[in-house]
Amino acid sequence: MQQIAFAAHLRDPAHAPAPEGIEDRRMGVYRELFFNNVEGLLAGNFPVIRELLGVERWKQLARDFYREHQSHTPLFPEIGREFLRYLQTRAERGQGDPPFLPELAHYEWVELALALDENDLANIHAVPDGNLLDGIPVPSPLAWPLAYVWPVQQLRADFQPASPPEHPTFLLVLRDRNDAVRFKAIDALGFLLMQALHGSESQRSGRELLRQLAQANSAENIEAFIANGAKALDYFRQCDAVLGTRP
Image (tube, rainbow, N blue to C red; front, side):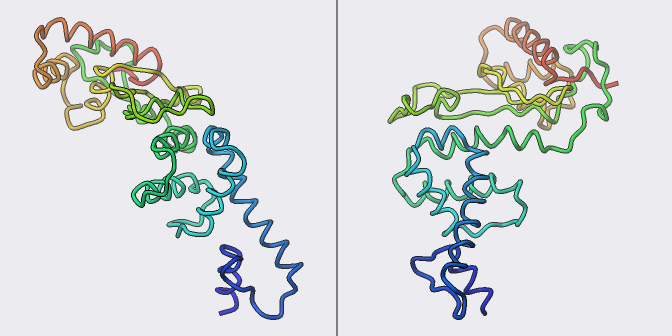
């Protein structure tokens, strides 16, 4: 029971009394140490949000997370994912946060997520210079196509739009063969293509896959669609999002 009371007090000292018999000065050391550790981890993972909100609002958000959120894991590298869950819950409750905050948090989190991903491109078999139209393209598991309602890559302290733009933002985040994590802007075709490469359609040749996408999206000129898709496949290969073709 004392451990439960101790943890409850650390999370919410204003409403949960400290266990009896412990000097408040000592409890103060623990209160500061535990919260600062959590806040520091969050600040390292979400520097844009911290700058955008300012010191006071950021610390209040971190303290709310520390007090309210029941984490699904004790692992420090997973604290970013837990923060994402918490922000989504706050958005559903209507806490008054900027409406773009969950998407911005996800945008910041994916860099760490990819850096920690255990996939190794050296272990994936592909023909690097294979024909991407006639062969079956092999996508990198470390290349994630992302779609956001908000222009997450542009958000900053002096640019916080009240409503989203007319068109979504499409991004490709990837970890290349040198283990560098990079973000690249892509168009709707690139997003659909990368999604398809990672999906069940990935058993098809590049040409078949593009033809299927053209038909699904009611393209007026299927051959032109395929030609543009071939350029996108070449671009993805150059940046290690596509590793080549299946042997």
